[in-house]
Structures are given as structure tokens and as C-alpha cells.
Length: 178
Image 1: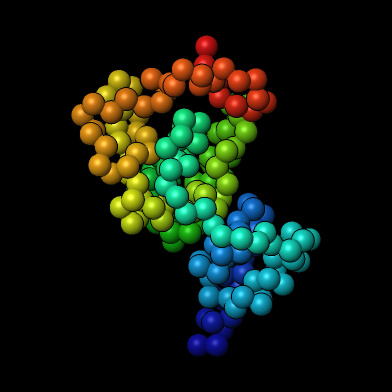
Image 2: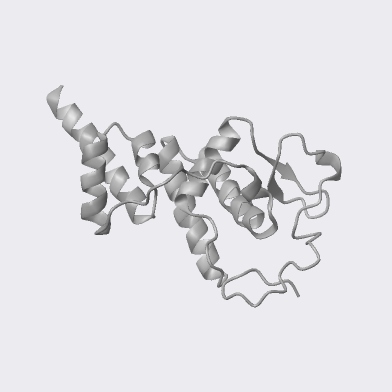
């Protein structure tokens, strides 16, 4: 039995290291592992070379509803949902893999990843708790993050119907609308 607990702990340390490399906040590590706060703090400092960020995690669902964050959150969540159906993984491993694939996609498109791994993790929690969901766009048939009470039949996404100033900025790595 002792060997199994050492293997379990090693797996949790490996998972924590992956999350730290992706930029996860300490609260995510605490929530997703059984390692003590002190061990996680030492591990965080050892892996990242600095102390973890202080402060509360983002809690509002509103951030995911604004134009560019919604597109990024929708991309991540679609990848996450696909992996959830296609692969047998622990939930946090699905979040890690989906986030890595999300980063690959944004990089391939020359975009800056707007979603941090902590926000991606929080997004999955919001969906699991019924606070957010994916709704099909009535024009492009893509699935986008919305509040669960959105009228699905008439929903039009931010790509099909962008706000007036959307994509007009010159910010490096931002989505551009032509």
C-alpha cells in the first residue's frame, strides 16, 4: 500500500508542476491536489523561481461574455468538451491538455492567448455548476459560451455579429475583423 501512496503523490506533484508551468494560481493547485499548502508553496517557488500571485481568483462569469474573451473561452471550452468525450482522463488532466491545445491554436493564428489556465479552470467549474454553458450560433452553428438562460434558437455569436468597434484595435495579437 505504501508504494501506491508514493506513486499517487508523485503523480500529484507532476500535475502541480504542469499547472505551475502553465501559470496556474496557487488556489488551483490546492483545489486539484492533496498536497499541503506548504509543499505547494515550496514547489511553486522551486518551479517558477518566484512566489505565487496573491489575491482572489476571478469569480464573475461576466468576463467570459465580453467579445474577445468569449471567443477565446469558447475555443477552449469546445476543445475541453471534445477531449472530455474522446479521452478517458481525470478532469484536471483534461483541463491541462485542452489548455495546451488552446495555446497551440492561438499561437498558430498569431493571436495572444487571452485565457489564463486559471480562468480556463474557473470556466470549467462555472459550466459544471450550471452557471455557463455552450450555445449553438443560429448563423454559423459554432458553439459559444453563454449564460444558460440564453434563448438558443435566436442566439448569434460575436463572430457572426461583432460589436461595432470589435477587431478595429491595433493591439498586437488581438482578433482582427476585416
